[in-house]
Length: 167
Image (tube, rainbow, N blue to C red; front, side, top):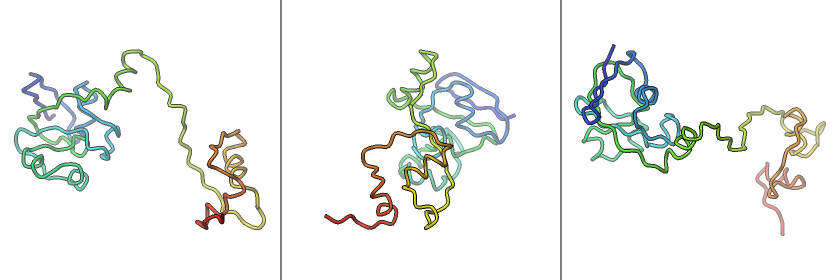
């Protein structure tokens, strides 16, 4: 099993070979920033390899400058742990993990009040000429939805086709 060594924190942990570095850090409650949960989109989970830093991934080249790359800084979420590593972790930015810290302090699930739902719907046809708002509600099993004021059922066809409205 590979060992992760953190000289600054005076800590060593053993991890399963091939496991994601970001997940290992989170699992062992080590400080690592993340706004995307380790999906490689925010560029916050920076760690510094103290020796033998791996080559950069395309996602890292978007988020890291040449100076960072030359210093051995990489994104933890982009790398698997295959051998022993010596790493340096950075201090957490309080604003990045505010939600996670609040959840830990309160021990209460935080609900954003928004649910992401993926729908697969047939395109509108001459046999089904209901407004898009009704079609979406129907596809969701008849749940009543609150539409923002920017959604106007009379204009939904033009919005869908990209046709600008006339004034």
